[in-house]
Image: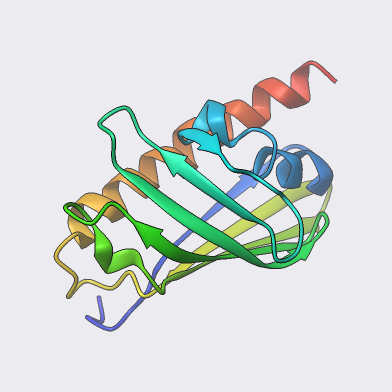
Length: 142
């Protein structure tokens, strides 16, 4: 792996882009962490807090329903992971052959960062297991 490569992950899900987009807005407290101060729209903001007390605040810089979300990390737990401040988290949603492909890229999360191993492994779990499971459950109840 290139040490300058940004973290990325892709999943394919048997559901609509709308369901995936909604999971990245309304459902984050179920698959990611506790959400507060949320305003899910362009230029909106939200804060995510985890059970261990770690938190990050994000500004939504791109909000294209059912297609794209971009969040910029604007603040975070100072004792744990201020490395994320300034990072951009890109979520791209595409429909291909009645399946939805979700591409995630965290611009700034590269192998040379102190938190890379923990953060990339944790993202793998959140995206490929928790988010995918949440979307599949949400799809099966529709």
